Amino acid sequence: MTRLDIFADPVCPWCLIGKVELDRALESRPDHPFAITWHPFRLNPAMPPEGMDRVAYLRAKLGDQVDAAARALAERAAALGLTLNPSPREPDTTDAHRLMHWAGLEGAQGRVMAGLLRAHWQDAQDIGDASVLSAIAGAAGMDPALTARLLASDADRDEVARRESHARQRGISSVPTFIVADAHAVSGAQPADLWQSVIDEIMAASR
Image 1 (cartoon, rainbow, N blue to C red):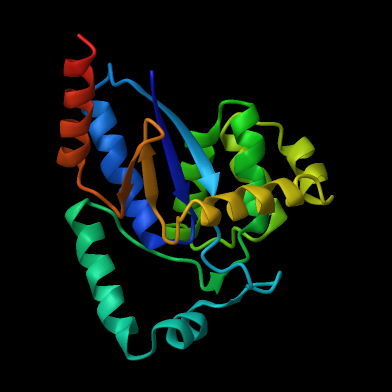
Image 2 (cartoon, rainbow, N blue to C red):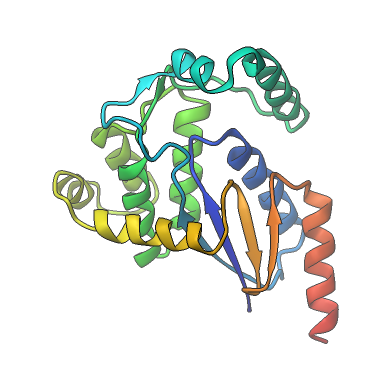
C-alpha cells in the first residue's frame, strides 16, 4: 500500500472539491494502492468557539474578492454536479477535527469527512454543534452517544493541536494538501485525471 496523507479542514471549499475529485479517481481505479489518513488543519485557529456569521467572516477575510471567490467555487462545483447550500455559520472546527481523530481509530475517517463536508456545504448545518457532529458519527457507523460524551469533555484537544502544529512545522500552510508516500506534496483541489495518472504510475512501478 502507498500512504496518502491528506491535510484538510471541512470548512475549506476546495477540500470539498478535492475530495470529490479524488473519490472519482479512486472509484475508477478500485484496485488503487492508497491507504488514506486525514489530518487536522484548521484554517481559522482563532475562530471563537461559537463561530461567526459566514458572510461577515468572508467579507472580513476576502474583502472585495469575496464575490469572485464565490463565483469560482460555484462554477467548479457545478462542473462536478454539486449543489452548494453552505451553513450560515462559519464554525470553529476543533470539535470536527476531534471527531476525525476518533474516526481514525475506528476506520471511519472517509465516511466522517464526507459527512462533515456534506453537512457544512450542502445541508447548511453547523458542524461546530455537538449534536450535528454526533449525528454525523452515527451515520458513519460510530457510537453517537459515546461521541456526544467525548465532545462534552476535553478529550484529545491537545492531540489535535499537536498534530496541527506538526503539520505547520512541516511547511504545510494551506489545504487541501496531499502527501503521497511521505515524499511528494500535491496542493489544491486536483482533477480526477491527475489522480488517475498518479495511481497508474504507482501501480505500473510496482509490477
